[in-house]
Every structure is written in C-alpha cells, then in structure tokens.
Image (cartoon, rainbow, N blue to C red; front, top):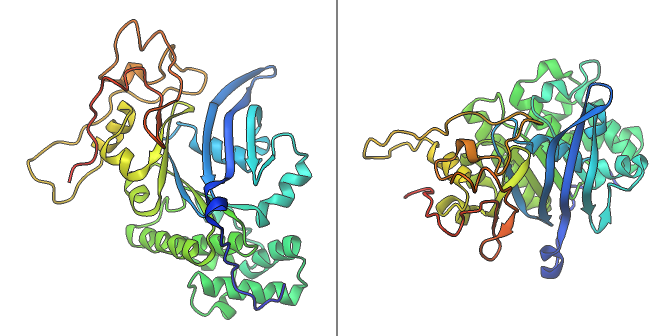
Length: 350
C-alpha cells in the first residue's frame, strides 16, 4: 500500500449494508473473584452493527457497556475475564472459538478501539509518529519510511496542525483533545471496518467534545466505517448515532432506532434516563426526574427484573419474581419488560 494512499472508502451494496458486520448473540462475560469463583458481569447480551452503521451502547456506569465492548475486541482476558457463553461474529466468522492469533490479526484492519483517557493509551517513551507507524508496519506491512509518511498523513487527516513536525513529538506535548485525535489517527491508519469508541469525550471540555464528535462523523462519511459508540451521554447519541442499545445491570434492556427510542421508549429505565436530561430553554419550570437508588454491582442483581427495585412501574409478585426476556416490541425494536404492552412511557418532548 503506497504511503500516499488516503483512507479507503468501504462502500457497500444495499444487501451488504443490511447484513450485520458484527453480530453479538447471548454474550456472557465473567470475572474471577477469589481463586475459584467467577462473577458474571454481563449476561445474554445481543446486538448487531451493520456495515457503515452508527450504534450507541448506552447505560450508567456499571451497566456492562465497556465490558461488552472489550469482549467483542477479545480483550477481556487482559483484565482477568472470560467469555463463558455466546458468540461474537465478525463478517460471518465466530471469534469466540478463534485462536488468539486471529483476534490479534483482526485488531487494526478489521476493527479498532479508542479508549477513555487517551493519554494513558499512548506510550510516553515514544513519539506519536513512531506509535502510529508501528501499528501500520505490523498490520499493513509498510517499511519504516512509508509507515512514517502514513503517520503524517493520518495526523493531518485528524486536523492536527503542522503534522509533519508534530509527528516527531511525544504525547506529553499534546493536550487531551489532541491526544484523542492521535488515538483516532492510530486506529484509522489501518482502515478498520468497525471503530469502537469507549467514552471518547470523557474528561474533555465541551468545545473539544464537539470537535471530536464532528471528526468521527467526518470519518464515517469519508470511509464508511461502522461505529460502536459507548457512552452514558444521551445527548451525544442523538447527534451521532442511528440506533441505540440501552444496557442496565449487565444486560440489554432496549434496542431500536434512536428517534423511536427517544420519543417513545419501551422500558422504564430508558424513560428515566431521558427524563433526567437537562433541556436548555425548556419552559414550565419542570424539575429533572432522577432515578432513585443505584445500579447493583455485578453478582448482586436482584431476582426477577434487574430494574424492579428502582422502577416506579413495578408490580409486586410479577416484576420481582420473573426475569423478563428481551423480546421484539415493534419492527426493529426490542425491550426487556413484562409490562411493555401496558405502559405509556414519557420520552423526549419537543
């Protein structure tokens, strides 16, 4: 691949675009607790990401969204976890049964991940150019000079001024927002088909957040890369994503198109999240509604519906005794609630 090549546009036919690039089914991840015990962190998680699609994985801290994203990258073993059940298919191949070498080969050219707090993901002992070039040399087989030229090209693509000079600098010379741009450049340098972004705007000020989000939108338009965006910020989801997967206490509780879910949620937890969003300029003096209690820790989930002890719509003897399945509600939507047919939940209002 010549060093002067720009990002490759991953155009798909309508039939290919409709086929999930990533298909996750019944994913269950456990972490060791003590010498013999394992604690379930996420269970029976299922969702799809189509080629070129933007999907948000949403929930409070502790909901299991980051664990799920690490699992689909094959990285839970690095943190003491394991996939105990389920499948992760990428481009039709199940990765759970694949050897570690296949996972390593796929990271970079198949899928890449942007982590929270990018300064911790960059090695302070190497220049940013060397770190981008290392990834390119490993996955694309370029020589050192071509790989460094690619690093300059990628820094320029993510709008870092004087890219040819700054490629020689170390991470400490970059601000938080610039470090995040470097991480995006590093991940996109090998033309992945799926980009996983785990809270990429955490700890950045509002104006920098906006530029990072715009950069991700631009990258999708330029390359057609699919995006799995992990966040707790529903405002960001509304701007960036087409579909939203809501998680609570280690499981998916709602899935559907963003507009449908935001204006007519089918699960009380989703409605509660939407009710807690501040709305600048809203009239009427309505106070924000907070969800009472807190999310239970892994291994401490209540019997029945995991949300019933915080839910204002729970029915004693039903919600606390029966664990609801994730079932289709309307075309393209699903929810995990025993009372979904009875409830008229409030969503975003104009």
